[in-house]
Each structure stands twice: as structure tokens, then as C-alpha cells.
Image (cartoon, rainbow over all chains, first blue to last red):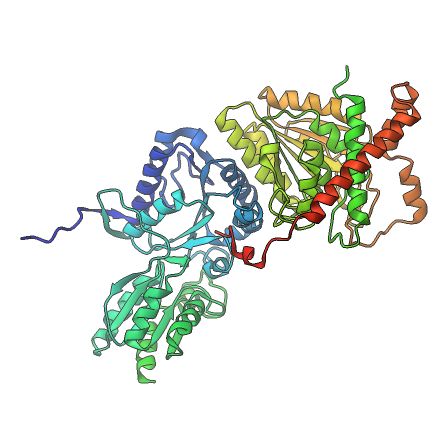
Length: 329
Length: 311
């Protein structure tokens, strides 16, 4: 063949990729609904539902009062009764208000009914720091990864935002879909034809041989920036985007660590019982122990104060230093 | 006008009482939430529901499930953790369900099933199939934020849901008056503009009449309704919880027993004589003995089942 065949791509912003996935799934399946604060004519707090209200109307796109507990509960009940609701929770910090319905009911429904009922619902929520303070900045995805029956995904690119959302809206159990405030305005190529990204498949974003760097969500951009920095020192990073936190793709991470012999995990949340700790232990169960460094937020709340926020959250120079230190071990 | 067959109502209440007594008598009965004293609420409410409707409850779910027509042997097996249970013994007390029987299920986090029920009601509304949902919860749930959030949204969206508070006046050991500031618990529904009423939950015919009115309101698309039924709890909170009331108090409560009261009324008006009543008691005991035998004979799940149906 003269030319390599590549799928046709369209450039779009992260938030537009979310909109496109939801629009396509709502068109295909009349049981897909959206519930949440300001999701209707307003189009979502990040304009991620722009234009959908005009197409699908108030029965299928419902603005809710400030009532996260009941909203997630209503979604879980509707899901158990045959619908596929997407609930928008503006800040991941507020997800805590709906934990009973999500964790005590939806995640356990298939188990406790011996497969008779399930709750196919997507809780779309937004993680991360962007100057909004101690209760609007947290990344608590690691809390969710330990809940049996719950799937957790966190895209870092528009293509994955699109493909993971489509998979989430077809999934037969509850999914927490985590985007990041700083990702909404980022552009990227997405396939023109309908494409799903499967859960439980990580993606190698940069090939390298000296150290494996594992991250997800917005921190992928920090990881790739750090890999670029240390490349100038001749250090070659294999950079893996987890994309799916539950289930985890340990095959891909362990395969990489077998090649590089070192692991650095990076996340914006806390490292104690964090995503990186879980990735590392599951990897080392396969590969045996390897040199490992974990990086996350400082063990402190994330302030809206710009100096304190920046101090708390990992950045590329700090990650680059940690990579060098890991190589020097 | 009668809304419920009086003899059928007595039979259903006797069956629930016999079931719970048999369960409590079993040496290894586990942690169970019994509803003796609250039978008239379950039986009266269910008399107003149709086959296309769904009932959800909090953890105190044995009476409502039996009243709804879930087979007693399957309920008993479920409560004892046996494979013959309606959920293969894995839900157990407080979490059992049988949607085919119109019992969408229990969720034993107090107040937790109320928003779930509203979601099931939203599905009914979107389907436009005329079905409604009833959610039964205790006075203990009336302080929970999930109830207040759900009342608001259900009223706003005119969901086809009937909120039924079985006010047994005790939340474990805390008296209703010490926990809740409102005068009547039905005022909670009235605040949101709902059809709202408080009735004597020890009078099965009164509960049935009020439930029929409420269901008609909901089914007519007029929005949700809130029915408070004031009842009593004749046993402690659970089979493992300490009883906080004195023997004298408990003996006094027995004089208000809804089954005794209804049976006495049927004897007084000549519907039943002593022999017939005794026969009904024996029939209930025999039926429950069969249910218990089925449950005892049913096997436990294997340990390998622990990982089934997780995701």
C-alpha cells in the first residue's frame, strides 16, 4: 500500500468530545437521560452538554435542584427500572453527598439481586485544582477504586473522553466518569467515525526504555511534559495513560516495567492508599519488587490561594526531578 | 365502602405475625428487623396497589414483602441465607427484592431507598404505563436529608409516587417526639403541596381506605402523596438490639395489637366465630411451618458464589 491508512480525524475540544458522545448515545438509545444542576438550557457548567437540551428536551434532560443525594438516588432507581441516566455532579467533592445511592445501592444491586437487577448509570464528575479551594479541587478517585461493582474511568484526551463516555453509556453497571477542569478547553483529534474505547485498557502515550511513568487524567499532561524535560538528559520514559482505574490494566503496566525496570506513579490526589500505590503493588505482584517513586498532592487540603495550590499539586519540573532521582538509585 | 376484604386482611396479618414469630423462635435467626405491630400498615397499603405497581421499603421489609405476595418460603430462605431465597440468599434481611411480584426491594440504609423509589417512579412516568410506586419507610427516616430532597423533586416533577411513613414512634431507642420537630409527619408532604394525611396505622381498614385515596390521587397524575400511619413496634428494634421499654409498657402495647383489634371487630360483627378464628391461626402456623421446612432444606450457596454477579 502506498499510503498508511489512518482513520479520519476531526479536531475538537475535550468538552465537545463529551457532548458528541452523549449526543450520539442519546440519539441511539431513547433510555439515555441526563440529570444534574444546570444541564438543561444552560448546557452544563463546562458547556459539556451544549445544544443537547434543544434536541432532546426537558423530559430527557432534567435540571435538578441542589440535591446531589436525591439526584444520584433517582438516577440509580431509574437505572434499576430500565433507563440509562447520566448524572452530572459539578465537582467531584460533591460526589460524597451521593455516596449512599452510588455505593450502597447502585454498586451492590447486581450482587444482591443475584444478577436480576443492575444500575446502568454514569456519574460524570469533574476533578482537580483550578483555583476553587479546599472543597472544589479534590481528586478522590482512589476512594472509588476499592468499591466492588463500581467502574471508574478518567480520560486525558478528547478522543478518550469521547470513546470512554460512549462505553460508559452502554455499560451494564454504574460508572464514575471523571474529567478534569483543566482538560475541558484542551483540543485533540477524535475519530470521525463512531469509535468506542474499551474499559480496562491503558494506552502508551510515549515509548521509552529507562523508566515507566504511569498517570491518568490531567496529570498525563504533566507526565508527558516531565518526560520531555528529562529526554534532554538522555532519559527515556515509557509513559502510560491508565484511562480506566477500575478495572485496571496491569498487563500493560507490568509489561512496561519488565522492560524499563523502574516505576514512577503520578496522580493529583493523595498518595496514601492512592491510585499509584495500587498500580505499584499489583504490578510488583507480577514483576517482583522494582525501584518505585510515587508522586501526588502534598498531604494537605488544596487551597484556592495560587501559591499554596501550586505548592500542593505536582508539576513537570518536580516530576522530572523525581525521575532523575529514581534513575540515580 | 370497604377497600379491603376484611377476612383476607386478617389472614394476611396472621401470616406475617406467624412468619416473624417462627423466625424469632428459630435458634439461629441472625440479625432480623421484625415488624410485629405494624402488620396493618403493610396489608392496608398493599391492598391499594395493582399488579403494575412497585413497592419499595426500608430495612423493615418482611411484612411488606409478604403482604405484596412474595412467597413466604422464598422470603424465609432468603432471610436465612439459603439458595432457595428470592435473591439466592445473598441479599438477606433488609435488601431482598422480587420485582416480578411487585416488590422492587428493600434498602436497609435508613432513608436510602426513598430517592431510589423516586427514580423507579420517574421510569414509570417516562414509560407512561400508568404504574405507580409506593415507598414505605419509618419515622426514623423523616430526619434524613434524602427524604426532604426527594419530596421536593418528586413534587416538582409530579412523580407517580406514594410516600408512606410507618410511624412506629421509635428509632431504635429514640422516641419520635425527641427526634423530629414537625407536629405530624405528614406535614412534611403537605409542605411540598402534596396530598397528605395521617391515619391510625393499627386500623387495617382505615389504612386501606386512606391508601386507596392516595393511590387514586397519584395514579390520576396529580403528583405524589404522603400517608403517615401511626403504629407500634411490639418487639425491640432488631433481634440483636436491647429492648428499652419495661415489661409493663410492652404488655400495655399488646392491648393495641392491630391483629387482635381487627379479629375482635370481625367477631363482634358476627363475621367470624371463635372456632373460625382459631382455624385461621392454625392455618397461618401450618403455612409458615411449610415455609420454614423449605428454607431449612434449602442449601447454602457455595463459597465460590462470593465473586458472582459483582460487576
